[in-house]
Length: 324
Image 1 (cartoon, rainbow, N blue to C red):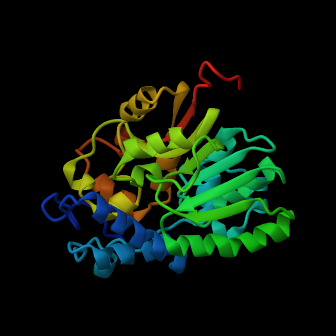
Image 2 (cartoon, rainbow, N blue to C red):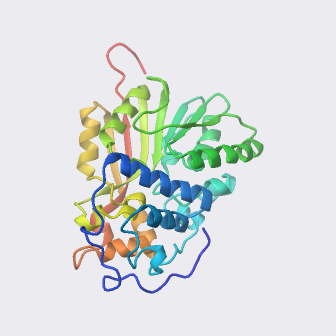
């Protein structure tokens, strides 16, 4: 994503979204929109490619705020700029596979995970492989990193990037599997750590995702997820916006809902750490999607009143019959 000039019109007078113009969609349609959007990112290399895809698959996408209307224009930040703004350090970025960073992060789950050598890690919604390639050296040659993504084009990109990862690190410990995060292609109790970066909010069945996480983790296994979450409910117009869904905002749920899901599944040592840096960064970069969402919020409020980046950490209990 190269820096590009943003068109000036993104205010409420230009393109007021309405709940009537963007109807709610069912679970399969949600997955279709998400898959189409992220396929466009994988093949087009950036967020503006996704915007064009959403416009073409969304019947209401011909409004003035769509890319076809020319109102809001492309994004205005690079993947490295965003990564630095939300907590990736220069050494991590210098050692990463550049083509794997698509600017889709809202936190740094590999730092949150405190990975150890020999561990097995699964990344839910692994995209181009960015966090997998950062995790690989941390778990070392005796460890394993498994990326799971439901978008074939993302999987192809990640597997292409794997060759560069092997060349740079000398390691062959990262693999990518096609699958939905609601139905992980991983055996029961086979994973030490589950990571994910700004993906769980995209799922139309989040309780199923958390149940799958619990299933694949070993006793004593850890959750280290960065995601977007809500401090308060979004207006209906935003929740019904398909581009806002693919952009990781409209599908986010309340922080308390995340906590309740973890508690219901019996997780221990649950910590939910709000990090407003992501929302501030997107506002600072004048991202068109975020500008449009902000224009739909009640007067006197701002994005960070509703949405936050959230670091989610938890541990699966060992049970009474094991030590871990």
